[in-house]
Length: 164
Image 1 (tube, rainbow, N blue to C red):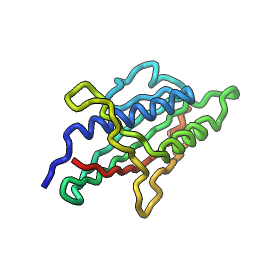
Image 2: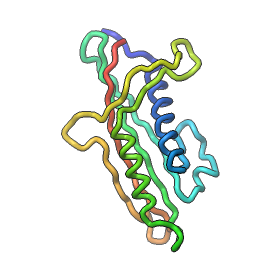
Image 3: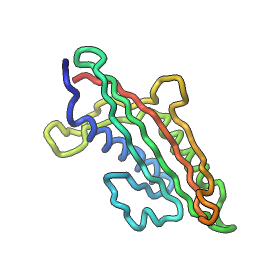
Image 4: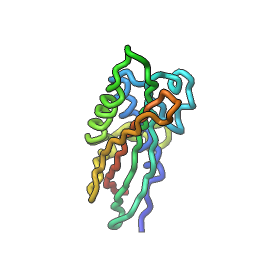
């Protein structure tokens, strides 16, 4: 029985964070990567922002030295409702851009400065095959009667197959 590479979780986290940071930057949406970015005041106080959470990896050896890896990604969008000058559909549009990005293969690289971190490609995460939709948008709407805050989320389930 083989063991998974102990660097995989770090490489997944760094690559997914880098990928979605590029997407969010492209639509001028501040992104807070949970566990990496502290609760930076300018990001968390922005009228619109997104928080990235990564769950996993869940790793299963399916053949000698061949692994199936599952990861879940949650992108929580927050929008402070802002009177007549703000487009009420901004959060819906932002969710659509993030959903489209999550529906594409996400390249995973050996990022870092530890042994084996050479920046080369490990492969691509793809939407997990299964019985339910694997990239879904949820609109929570206004989160409280008195708060002028709306939230939506993009929930994505990924897989990659790797040899070690």
